[in-house]
Each structure stands twice: as structure tokens, then as C-alpha cells.
Image (tube, rainbow, N blue to C red; front, side, top):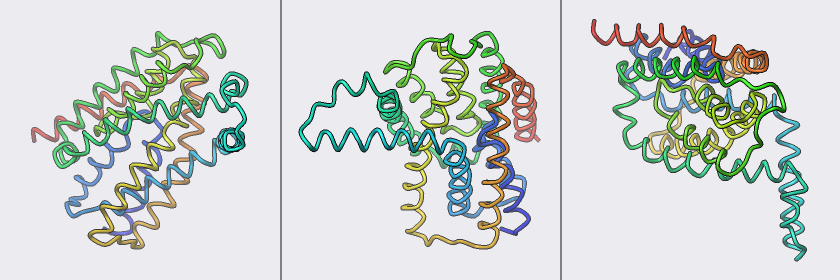
Length: 275
């Protein structure tokens, strides 16, 4: 892979990881466009870690508070003191529990879909159809906007539902951020709750998926070349900008405006499959 290709794909990853247009789908289409057919697993791992770093930066205070609550809870448990009441008193601890519950179906579904990645991640037909589906979900979500603090609270059922949707978003063309935020709003969460849970739920999912990918890549040798380094840095910087933009659009009720783009991109992907 050439350096300029790494930079372009890094920008593509950074923008589409958070904007609801499917990063995996765009990476597949980008690699097909450049004619990159050899294994690019090392590159994919690196640029995904770049966008994960963007999430950690934006939600640093939330993640720090959640981890502090979890550590405090474990310390009390090891000291033999009761902890059950903490889940009702500490919202950060309850949020951590919701992330765990949501991560279980994500992991199970992701492991199943991974067995078919050789088919899913090389097909512009699949990407096109899923992009059109993503656009339709985004468009329908405009009817489910709720003002801040007016929605239902996050509970186990909603966490599991969003976790299931996140697992299905492994399919290229299905936007992880778009589908999970929309699922949260469909389930009754206000748009701020849905966005916050979506991105914090993505942290263990992305990290876990990348660990599995690293293990697989090490078997064939993990190659870090200049194109990968440049792509990772660019994916982090563009990811920061894209995440801030998306949060602004979600909070102002303009999340669905990405639907036409998904429809157009999906139609072009289907057209390219026919040519």
C-alpha cells in the first residue's frame, strides 16, 4: 500500500467511523477502488485503534468516572462490604453494568459473523444493500427524536437491544453509530442518552475486536509500514472532528440528514457491482 493510499483510507476511516455512513463499508469500497487485494489486516487494526483513541479523548471524563466507580465497587467487595445498593446510588456503576450487558450480545453476534467475513468484506453488493438499509433506518429515526432528559431511562433490556444491533453492525455497510443511536431512540432513550451509550459501548467492542485481529495478524507477521502509520494518525485526527460533528447533529435533531448520502453511496456500490 502506498502512503497516499494509507492517508486517504485513514481519512475515510476517521470520517465514516462516527458519521452514520458505515466505516467498514467505505473501507471495503476504498480498498476495492485502489485494487488492494492483499491482506490489509494490519492497516485495518491500526486505523480502527486511531478512531478508538478519538472516542477515549472525547469521553475521557466519562470513562474515568466509570472506571473509578468500578474500582471502588471491587474494593468494597474484596473488603467484604455489601455492594448491591451501590448500583442504585452510583449512576456510573449502573452505566458500567449496562455496558457489560450490551457487550455480551455484541461479542456473540460478532464471533458468528466473523466466520463469514471472507464473503461479507469483499462484496460491493452486500455493502450497497446495507448502506441503503442504514439510510432507511436513519430516515425513520427522525420521528423518534426526544428532547434532552425527556426519554426513558437506560435499563437492561434497552442495553441488550442496542448490544444486539451493535453486533449486527459488523456487517459492512451497516453503520455502527447510526444503527445503535437509532436503536436507542427507537427504544425510548432521548438522543443524548442514545449517543452517549452508543459511543461508550463501542469502546470494549472495538478494543475486543482489535485484540482478536491482532492475534490473527501476528500469525502472519504484524507489518507496520509508513502507510499504516500515516493512516492511523489521520484516522485519529479526522475521527475527533467527525465525532464532534456527529454529536452536534444528534443533539440538534439533524441525525437523519445522512440518509440521502447512504442511499446514494449504496446505489453507486450496487451499480459498480453490475458494471
